[in-house]
Length: 289
Ligand code: OGA
Ligand code: FE
Image (cartoon, rainbow, N blue to C red):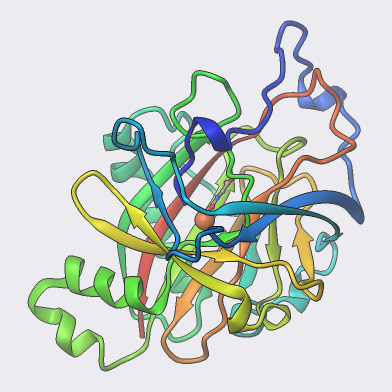
């Protein structure tokens, strides 16, 4: 989901920023308030603008519903999580040539091939990867994109099919007959993550009824993402102190088994004001096979 000024997380003052080596990284189960979806009060279909809305229009027409939830740490039991079942999985020990993540062309040249490889190596059945987008996030008031503090899923069935059509041209029809998945590959840039960690829900704990398609209005086209209602049964996880050589795969759509993970950044109550804000990159991919 796009981040706008109104969804920015609180930023810290970096006047006396500590290096993360001095920090005792928060680990284990924690509690935090997460923001869920609440429907537009007038009963209309939900939408949001990715960039500036037209003059006089709000950013979105739906509301928010905050609830305190328990967020469990998957560190030390990474092997228990399977993307086909839970909607997410981890990969450790991935080396990367790219260090800066400031130049889009360098990101495409250096980092995209690494993402393609890590998917081919770690997604059983994957035969082909098409990368269509990436987002760098920095918890800085001047950053273009900041962490997203709203539970969401990036794609729906409709937008997944539209992505395949949009990017794969003449091959789309054939590819849509096979298995296709939309997977985000997420990693920190300034790990270990000690503020605004990313939380993800076990796919099985969020029924389809709690997932609400939202019109996602870009300046030149309209896509669809999903908001997530709170009904009390969702099970949330994070990976404490996530490092730069670690990857979390967030499956947003799978045409075969259907696992998809709602996700959101959260404010960790253990984070101290002088700790560095989280910087990260997520790469959005189509995985075939
Ligand atoms: C994503 C995402 C939010 C964040 O990777 O799809 O929504 O705060 N990330 O990193
Ligand atoms: Fe997302």
